Amino acid sequence: MTYATRTELEERYGTDELEQRESVLPAGAVDRALADADVEIDSYCAGRFTVPLSPVPDNIARVAAAIGRYRLLGDSATELSRKEYEDARAWLRDVAAAR
Image (cartoon, rainbow, N blue to C red; front, side, top):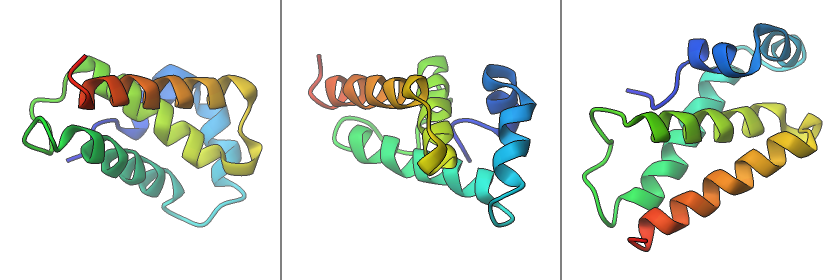
């Protein structure tokens, strides 16, 4: 189970961005980026919830997409993708701290 899917990434950020990154990365890069996002989310949520979270709340899917995108972009990350990633991590820290 994954918190965000490739389709959700495409819906949020467009297919062009994903296809462009995939053209220069090894096969499976999108799946790996999303799996990394899942692990990061679970690391924050495990102290308060049973993980993996099921059903997946909409806000977790949004956070997973932001983290997955940032990880996929790597050294090509934009300022906006970095900010969305940092915002996602800040929100997860609040969840972990029960705020």
